[in-house]
Structures are given as C-alpha cells and as structure tokens.
Length: 483
Ligand code: PLP
Image 1: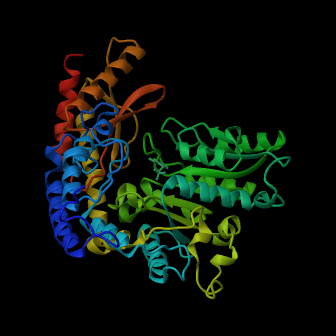
Image 2: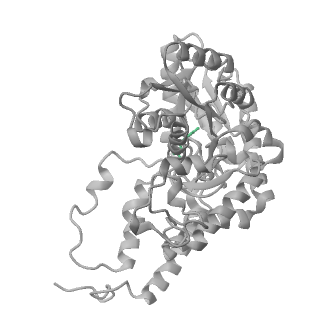
Image 3: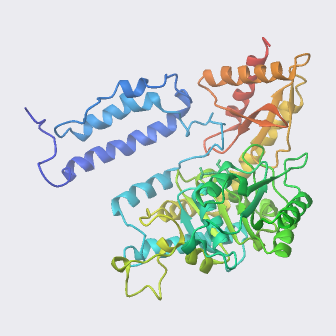
C-alpha cells in the first residue's frame, strides 16, 4: 500500500518542519475560531452517536499527514462540539480559554514535565508553589496556606476530606480501613455540590455518612441546624469529623456563613473544608473579598481557576493550613520514587491521588501575568455587572421572576406561568429552555430550587458582551410569548 508522501518516517517523531508549518497554521486557525466562535451554533444539533458513526471504527494502519488529521478536526469534530468559548454560553458555570492559557497548554505539552517529584520537574514544582501563592495573595487568603494544584474541584474535595479522615484521633483509617470502626459523619448543606457526596462514597464514609444540613430561604447552610445535627449524631453514636461549607453553590451561587460554620467546627473539633470552586476566583476583585470571610479558619479550601479565572480545564487550586495532615493521608514512597532531595524539597505527588502530574501551573502563570491582578479583577467585575443588568431586565418583566439572590455572575429566574399548575409551569420553563438552546445563539441550563424548575443564566466567558446577554434575553422572551 502506498504511504502518502508527507507521512512520518518509520520511526521517531513527525518531521519537525511539517510540525512548524502545521503548527503555525493551527495557531492561525485557533485565532480565527476564537474570533468567530459566536457565528457557530453554541450547542450542535447532533444526535447521540452521530459523530461517532462518521469516524472510522478501526485505527489507521499507516501514517497519515498532520494536514489531513487537522482538516478532519474541522470537518468531523467541530460540528459536534458544544462551544464553551461561544460568548452565548451561559450554562452551568460558563468559563473561558484565553490566548495566554492556550499557549501555556501548548508549552506544557511540549515540555511534558511530570511534576510528581521535585527531581522530575524542579521548575514545574517550584512554579506551582509560586503561582498558587500568588493566587492566595490575590484572593486575600492568609499566609501559611499551602497550595497545590489538583485536576478538578472534585479531586480537591476528595483530598480535603481524606485529610479530615486522617485527622480523626485514633482512627488510622489509612492503615486499618474503616471496617469495624466508629461510624464517621460529615456535613454539608443540601445545596452542596455532588462531589462532596462522591468523596464520601470513595472514602468509605458512605452516602449515609453525609448529613445534609437544611439551607435557609437564600439557600445558605443554617449553622444552628448544623450544630444541632452534630449534637444529635454524637448522642446517637456517630463520630462527626468534617464539614464542607460552600462559597458559591452550584445552583444559585449562595454563600454559606463560613464564619459561623467555622465556630461550630472549632467547638466540635471538626475539619472545615470550603468548596469555593466557582466563587473563590471572584475574591481577586477587592470589593468581593468578603466572599472568603471566615475561610482563613478553613483546614482546606478549593477554588477552580478553570471555572472563573480564564484557564481551560483542568486546573483546580487546593489550599490547606495543615499540609502535614494531607501528606500523612497520601504520601506513599516506594524505593523507585526515592530521591536525595526529598527531605528538603516538596514532592507534590504527596498531596493527592495521582502520581503523574501535568505542568498545569504554566497556564495559570501565563494568564496571571498576561492580564495582571487588576485585569483579572476587571474582567470578573464586568461579568458581575452583566449579571446584574440581566437581573434588572428579568425583574422588570411581569411574565418572569428572579428566584434567588444574585451576588455574583449567575441569575436564577423563571417564567411565572400564571394560572398554570406548578408542574405545568415547570414544563413551560423547560420548553423555553429547549427553545432558546435550539436557537444555537445561546445556551442556558436549569436547576431546581424550592422544588421548582429554575433557569440559570451564568456569565463567565471572557468574550461575552452586553449584546450577547441582551440577545439571550430576547430569545427567552420570544420563547415565552406563545406560552
Ligand atoms: N463544587 C462546586 C460548587 C461546583 O459548582 C462544581 C462544578 O460545577 C464542583 C465543585 C466540581 O467541579 P469540578 O468539575 O472541577 O470537579
């Protein structure tokens, strides 16, 4: 069989001259993609299985030119993408990839540094420590918080709660496991993210080991209900050990009263983990520093630059005041990972599940430098402003209502559906959502609050301007008109 003329040689990498040519073209293509993302449908109209059926089921037996492969990205992959970089992406927690971060990812792949040990990646390890300390300073967390990058907030919460389990006196779950031991109980509000419950499943705490504390009318954990629950559980023979407070809940971005929760934790000697996955980044805005009030007392905390600090997935910042406990929970050093520097330099594999660790710090470093602390704050401040503008439009429309406070860049609202039963009004909201999302111009998601279907408009993309928000509002009103 003929091998195409520009294919790779039998051994070694693709010819680097070809890489140069295709790489330049690709950077050009990416710039055009980012400039023109808003002309693409934000959600593709594809059926499950459609993209897959267009791709060869078997791998290519022979080398193919990069040019052909990249052409197939445009032809076969792009039409099946939901475009998170579309300025009309308002679903979940909208986020962005930015030029400096894309270059950072490219470099990280080129270096392929594995930051598992200091020795295997001295600069990656030390840059990670520096960049996470910059982020700590930018968000007003106190000195003494040790930061390490995890892939996601789910992993960071798992690490925080594993450390909490490690800190339970006399338990030694790491060595003995949990069978036949005291039954552990941890707490989070009913609005907490599912990653808390998932961490409980993984850590052997079990779903019953998570007690969900009721939230108040503004979806914040009730600290008095927390204190009562801990007392009840102790009396019933449980061993309470950890509380997860949320700063910026997934559904409504409510902020738990961390100061009061920290009081309960101190009194009851419980590990306090703070999930600030979304809202933590907003603390780079000086007037939003209040978000992390009380968090100086947290034992561990997570915030996700990949949600609202303009780096692409994945990059989650995990902080702890007690790195020695995290290390005691996770460090396991077989002979082949021993190094001469281990007593004087950190090996970041000791602070999480994975051994191999990507050089993620590079993209965050590049973003912080390319935008500057003031530039990051300005972008987040603008997102909050846009959300408040959208909220004012919803409030002024008698057919819609805002259903939760909007302290940040997410607005929860619904079509009132006057005269309809609750179930019928929920269906009408779902219809509106489907219709807007089908337009390809905007993408919103939904949640349930107070047992009602609620629409969410989340602003977080660096390319979103007021005209995009206005268009989403126009689409929502058009979709509601026939109802
Ligand atoms: N915590 C909160 C409050 C979230 O909203 C999310 C995701 O949206 C997560 C945790 C999980 O984030 P990740 O995807 O980084 O695991």
